[in-house]
Image (cartoon, rainbow, N blue to C red; front, side):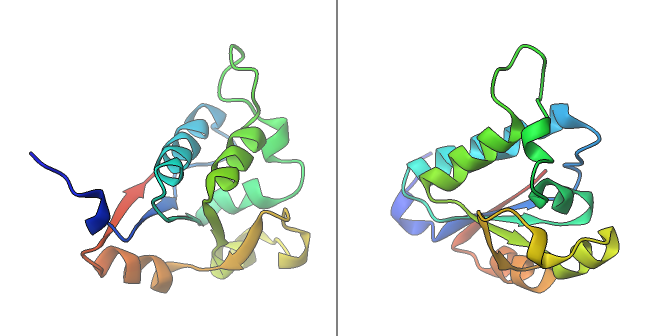
Length: 131
């Protein structure tokens, strides 16, 4: 099957089951985000449910996907951002988790939730992944 990268407008990644309580699930979404962004594909990462806790300063930096991996989840997250991924925090999830928007990590510059993610999912030029 032939694939035209130019036909893809971007990749939207939804972090839903990516809970800080289960750190072994947390590096993979950022690997995929960094890979797509390194290919010059626009990437948006939507943090929802418990994943918004990763946006609180210090949380992601205190987690590792495995004791065998030197990088923290925060370092994986910053690698994706360094390649161009954009982080979006769901305002409803922030509220549900009791997190004030002003305390988020500086890499998270935007807000976006169900409506924004669904707009991407309904756009045939965008690809979506859910973790």
